[in-house]
Length: 283
Image (cartoon, rainbow, N blue to C red):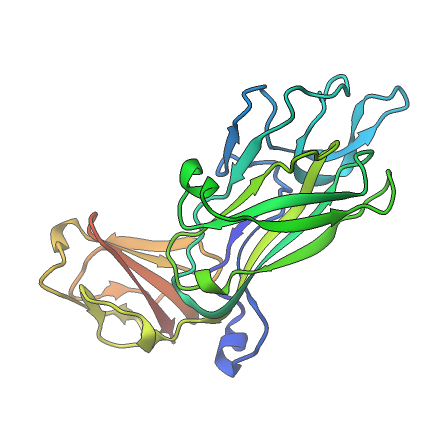
């Protein structure tokens, strides 16, 4: 299941708790990786995939385990034979918006090397501001060391990478590449991105519109700047799970939010050429 969590529990924000906020995660339980970009560089028709973790049947053939994972393998999944050439596959996450956060940030990868593939492999992980594979390859990866105690069983562990330098950016991508000499394969059970704090309302730089009152009650009273193309402007309101709950044009007399539960929300205002965002509180 994919989650784009724009903020955590409201009480954490109110009382300044130090716990990290989960911004985005994918646990692959829905077996849907259609929002990831999967690149089969070696063009052997084998790539990153969502499936059950690899097991071996009594006949010595690849079989399904019980965990929903995101994996890439250096074996033919129908015969178990080794692939040639060795895998060169890349997986690029959907864009992750970290522009409403500040402080430290972490990328947490729960992963293991697949069974019968050796005990120690290095998974290259890239954190990039671009989704272009050539630009990504120019960067330096962070190496995650996957250690397996023996050839069988589960050895999924959390591996944490500091991504504090990316907090505050609008587009960040998590990228996995296949390790060299990776043995059987690599399996990822969950990917999580966290941040320390939500950016305070007064720290958000808004130039094309303003919200006349914050916290708001029944209406969001908006004022447009000279640069905003009002006729082509949309206003979108997102709730605490990142779901769109309201959408309208730019209404100067006020956008009705009386039916919206109390809490913290994000408003996104776009005229097609520029997008600006604002956190607000609904009383």
